[in-house]
Image (cartoon, rainbow, N blue to C red; front, side, top):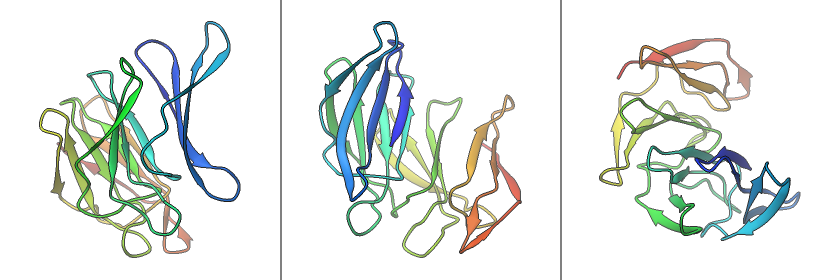
Length: 175
């Protein structure tokens, strides 16, 4: 599952694994009352996806693993309406990937599992057009890694796995 801090200070928890299969269930946690509220289900059952708070206050969920294959599908959650809507799909499926909000308000997706065991593919989502564009690949295909936005605007991608081996390399994405 993912847990995303919303502008309201509440936390959106999305999908995940029930122990036997992925789920589309979502809940909102209110830290001021310590109460959970069920909100609308996603349109797709997912695990190993990402959820990124956009500058608009909406949440972009990318990729993930469904019952069988990984997916390139994406959804947007609007906290003001408590509704999910599908948006443009990525060029290839990603799961166990990263999604980083850039200073421009766009979202950079890096690596993960794709069509093959791990991918170096990177894509950028532009919320103003709801479109994806592919960008330069990483040097090393990786999944289960981290991606951190630096003060310079660069994204530092570290660690993860390639195939079945852990890697200790890092690389920077320059915007």
